[in-house]
Image (cartoon, rainbow, N blue to C red; front, side, top):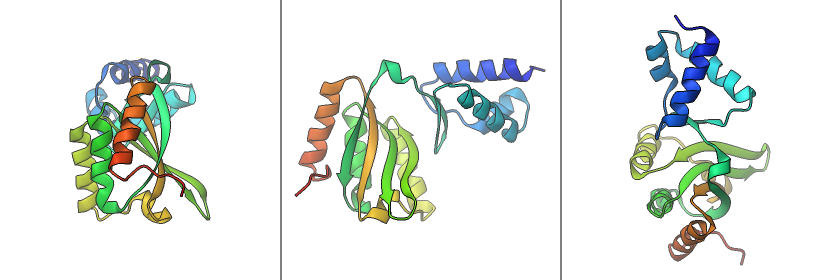
Amino acid sequence: MLSGVERRTQIKEQLLAANKALSANYFAGQFKVSRQTIVGDIALLRASGEGITAAFNGYLYRDDRTIFTGKIACKHSPAQTETELRLIVANGGQVLDVTVAHELYGELTGQLNLTNNQEVTRFMHNYRTKQAHLLSELTAGVHLHTLACADATQFNLIKEKLQAAGILFTAN
């Protein structure tokens, strides 16, 4: 049986090597511990400064030094959400999060970490089957996304595609 330090080291190594999110249940089964133990391990890793983020489908390690990140402002209806997300990933972007400015709570951010069409499909399936609400519904469709991509040129291409689709928010 591994010590907690050894287990956390292996969790970090696996997250660094993974090209998709890995769930707490996955790690719990692998290390024969409870899901809650893994959640605690992840919390300790994050508290020590590791770039681990939680997504709807598990945990990812994100090293912000190796990618370009930028924020975009969007405005659209819930029906246009899938179009927005697919445009971003089809043009080489990753949708890291969504943020809205709530009148009572201030800034609310949800972690998305969508990197490909399969993850967009799963996210949209969860949205529809769970009858959940999008954060952007709280703000009449206005929201921000943090995107990750290879460079500023790719980021600007994504913005152009969203503008052409009528999704990029611009001041009147």
